[in-house]
Image (cartoon, rainbow, N blue to C red):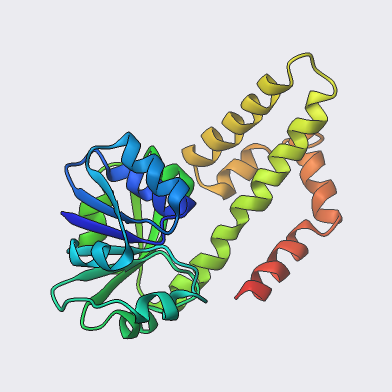
Length: 240
């Protein structure tokens, strides 16, 4: 495909890195000079250009802009009716994006995570599952949702990643003060959490770790008594 990227920040550049070896012709915006220069230096298939040239050279366009700057950035560009737009912007609906890129069609919203650069990451998306799967499905898991309201709920729920990472980081810091190899301690905890959560659903895992008086049960009950569940759900409600 001929793919263009407007707004080549951390997430967009990770998405490009994940597909740059797949034979696409990719043109990225020069507005994020650090990321675009790195990508063009890494891959012969990636070129850097101004935003209008990105549009002119592309059949599929990724939008990685901040939602608040999108109207000004996109309003100055001329799109074509044969173009498909995939947006990474959390703050605008698919209809709102389409209004900004007409006569092009906004076909999908997807929210990549940094791990998309290497593959093996979940991708939640709303819209045209076929085009998202064609581009990203070979190495990632696609999780399509049925409505814009479901997408909004997924966007809120995915924010659990940062608190989970913070919990692992804090646990690793605590462990690092008590063992000789701090880096190994963090690596152990990261792999512990990732492998167990990827291997089975949450409810049976919690039950398996619910040995009366065991370390896992005791820590979970302590944290629940401190309001962990209440704080999490009220935070998610606030995001929604």
